[in-house]
Length: 259
Image 1: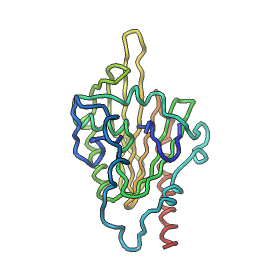
Image 2: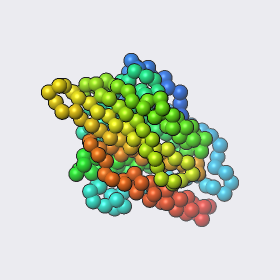
Image 3: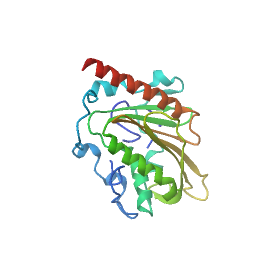
Image 4: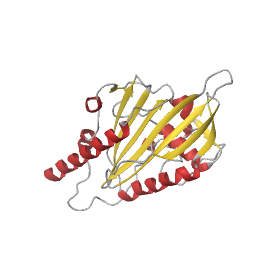
C-alpha cells in the first residue's frame, strides 16, 4: 500500500458507509457496494462536549505534527502517490452477514472513526512487499472511540471466518483474528484480517493480509491500517504505534504549554 499524505486511504491499509464504526449496521448482505455510501466528509462532523478544562482541543497543526512518515520508518517505506493495486479488487466485496459487511465496508473506506475535529492522514508504500500503510490522527471523543473499540472486540467472534463476493476477484474467504496489540495508549484493539480469493480454477489464489489498529490517547485516536499481498513486514504495527502514541502525546503537551 503507498503513502498519499493527508487525505487519502487505501483508496480513500483498508466512503464511510453505514458500517462505519460506532454506528449500527444498515447495509444488508445484498446491499450496495461500499462506494455507494456517503463519506464521512460529506456528513456533518459529530458534536460533543468540549475538552475538559486544562486539556485544549487538538489543533490541525498538532494533528499534522503527530503523523509518522517515511523518515520515521526508513527503507523500504516511502511516501505513496496512488492507491494499492489490490484495494478495489479484494476489499470491495459483499458478505452474507451484516456485521461482516460492516467490517468489509470499514476496510474499503478505511474510515473506522468519524472525526469530531481535526483529522490528519499519512500513507506509506512498501514496494518490496506490495504493502501500503495508512496512518490517521483523529480529534475525537473518548466515548466514541471506546464504542468503536468495543465493536472491534466482537468481530473475531461474530465474523471469525466468512465468505464474500468481490467485484473482480470472485469469491473470497475472509478470516478475522485478534492481533494482540502492545500496551500502548489508554485503550486499544487490533485485528488481523486475511482475505483469500481464487478468481478461477486456472489461477493461483491471491491472499491479502490487513492489520487494523485503533488506539485511544485521551480523547484523540490513532487509526492504523496496513495491508500486503502475502505477509506484512514484521513488527510494522508495533513500531508505528509505539512511535505514534509518543508523538501524539508530545503534540498534546505542546498544546498545553501554549494554552
